[in-house]
Length: 395
Length: 111
Image (cartoon, rainbow over all chains, first blue to last red; front, top):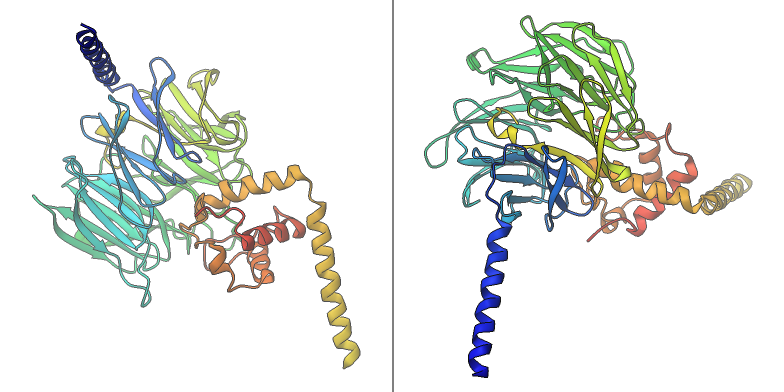
């Protein structure tokens, strides 16, 4: 009898346990979810933009300094690219690590292909790009960057996806841009553009997927490729944006992947200047400059293009400025606190989430009134990535 | 000749003493701020663990190759031609000495 009771007990407990496990995987849409990188603790928080809250923390992602993420096309899985070469696939519904590999020694972001089948990671060490099957994270291609010495290959930066199931990236040390076309089972072809300029530090693709632009650190200007006409080669734009002026020390590299396009204007952070550059996106000529608080890091347009939100480099990273994309005036300034590292708009742009690293919070603002709606706790938060990126080229 | 050498030696010793004294004078709060700055802000290029990124690995084993003055000068003036900026507008010499000393000791390096 006692034995029977014991058995029953075991069955009940097992049922309860399995129930808990099943319950941990939620049945819900992921359209209002996202992740926040907690850089110091090597964890991420899964967040819900409808309830404005963090719903789970996932740990064990390694060194997340400068980490970024992309999403599977069903927006269920996030692929997180860590600094230490870690590539972690996270299941937002089951709130756990689905798979994790260390694919390189030192990495700087990645991308997912148009068809969602391939995930590419950009590596500083060993210099190059590695491409993985997005389901299994199995390596399908190892693209070694151009050698710059006997033991070193160029670091790769500015990796994005492009229409035609392509990946595009720049080579920091060798001054190149490579376009990689994916085939059915691996890489189909690689097209290399050389002498594109000195030290490309990051790249962006316009939201329509037509133009790839690499920012240059070693000289003023940017390198542009029209993907409708790659046979035309690389065009240099804004070559004179700093001629005759001395650059300021750059304490943090600007980012281009947070491009801001509003109407026929493209807004770019100038390297080593307290300015945003305004580019006309039909002539690709400079059409203006906006003096801002300090050296901009991210310039991101609200999804409707009406405002541009800008954050700044150390030591002035406590401020966010908001610029009217029509008048090019600064219309508002926020001071959330030291270490404003990133900001991300909700999919239709009614709210914006701002990470404030040194205060260990995420601030959520109304984008019309600029009022703070809520602060939620997070450990040294940096990048914020919402799932609507799943359907966007270049994000 | 001898006098010059003595002078130089004395100056060097003095300088060293000054630097050491200056480091000692940094408040615990300032040291904590600098520690946070190195990990978080230097970390954006050198990595939070200081194992490198766009900037090189700051492994104390590797740093043994460089005298402390070399590290101090690199922090002070940056490395022209690379993304390493000069920190002279942000940090005092004693703060730079403190950071270089800690880097040499591997105080912030995570294995």
